[in-house]
Image (cartoon, rainbow, N blue to C red):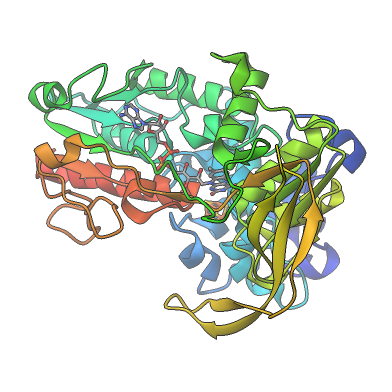
Length: 470
Ligand code: FAD
Ligand code: SF4
């Protein structure tokens, strides 16, 4: 019996869920992976060795009970697996889709020694998708509601993680967001080919059934004074993300045809979802030669969006080598399959053009001494300038914190990089310098990952429960 074989990992190789053909993918804003069939999910889950010390669990930022739910899936026990996976993760179906597993759980799987890691992320996604389709919902029957109420600003993964913990302990969570839908960057940043928007719509319905209240389309600080929230609620959690665009700082950046990554992606999502407010915001790169600058997840999403819009050619220029790219290797491979060309070890020095973009001047680099984070610094190779012809340039160098001015008046202190001070190891986890206010996610750690934002939101939720003595 295939499913009861301790040496399954020898007999059955790693198999990711099937991908749609690259040619089909390149025309669609739809997820590229087909769902696992039950027998395939079970066979893949059963490849887990159940090592005594599960490195995958340590490497997973929310410390999922991975071998335990893999075992349940291999036995066909999906509902129990869903209960278990929700004990540590508020958005397992999202993390299963967008985590850079090759750098996290799967990167530390013992089976990487020649056999191929267990497809942990795909099984995690399968568990929740299947359980929801079977009608499973988080069990709230034992929750007794308290009179405590917490306001959450930001319906991104940090805010949602916090709300999940609070309602499960009977604390009313009211989530404010300036956008018309929940999800933060999950909805208005990450494109549909990685995460279809119906996933967050379903999650919204589940959270509402659990007792979370969403007040959307409210920009706190503009439409509603923050002080009112401090008066009305016992505590406030901030999960507002980081949105300040990092400029290249080179000549020509203002030329027509140069686009900011997030503006480009958000306008495209809004266009696809029909949320468009001003049609002038939407940029189509159809028929153009596009150069995307950067090597992270955002750059990869811009590359693949341009391909889907029908760009004539898409080239991604990055200043380090492929080995040192910050984004997920899986997504780089997907981009390549869809037709993106990569130019590694190229640093932009100027956008060239008279009236509009005509190209991008780059220099070659080689990797030198490590910087303060241990990453090798790119050093310019003298005399290596070249111009890459382009009709459009998309700049994807990342984001910095953009704390609103009213933080100071309520005593929220920032570090020297503009991140909110809210230490995990404080008296209460993720409490800010105003004891009533907690914070987590990108605005505390700087731009990072969905799963780390979920983790911090959940930990802050625990901190709030301790603070409120619930
Ligand atoms: P956000 O998701 O940014 O949510 C913050 C929310 O706060 C927003 O909805 C915003 O509208 C709201 N808000 C802010 N200010 C106010 C206010 N004054 N009033 C009301 N609401 C407010 N991570 C991965 O793990 N995998 C990926 O593949 C991946 N791809 C990415 C692709 C792109 C293009 C980008 C930009 C990021 C990507 N990331 C990825 C990173 C990930 O999306 C973020 O790290 C994560 O969403 C941060 O969560 P958060 O809750 O801290 O903030
Ligand atoms: Fe892996 Fe992310 Fe799931 Fe953790 S949350 S098991 S890192 S896919």
